[in-house]
Image 1: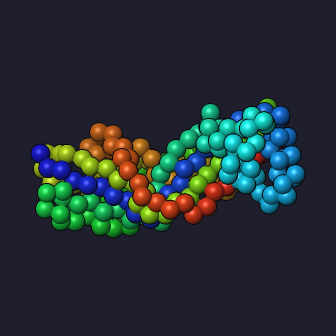
Image 2: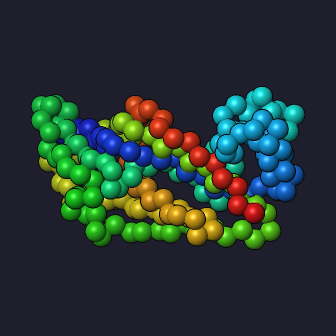
Length: 189
């Protein structure tokens, strides 16, 4: 058995979408107005400060969608033989041999009865890291993944890489070392 480390460097995002009721929408808007906040994200920087309103952390509003993954066009993948330290793969993520054949899933959400909260952090650095143990040499063609585009109310789509597998076996993100670069929260009514 051989061990390999898979790392993805660049940009990534945690994305959530969830339904929220009108009371929460009104509370968030009231807090933003009272504090003269420029955007709703500022309300969720420190929800403990507004505990009397019953707010949760932004990432807990996720009954429609919640995932984290690298941006496929702004990341590079590095695979290293753990024993020798030799890089066996180092290229932009979207140049992987399996990239064009990756399944694409669109997470599109329309506002129906309840409003929808969409939240996202963007991070830069090591956005994915895992170790795998396999028979033989690493084969780029056996690394598969899915792409998911998330959109609410036709307001721009954000695509991330999800569902990593090597030779059909799921592999999970075991570590990250990132700096948060942006944080956004929107409520669609």
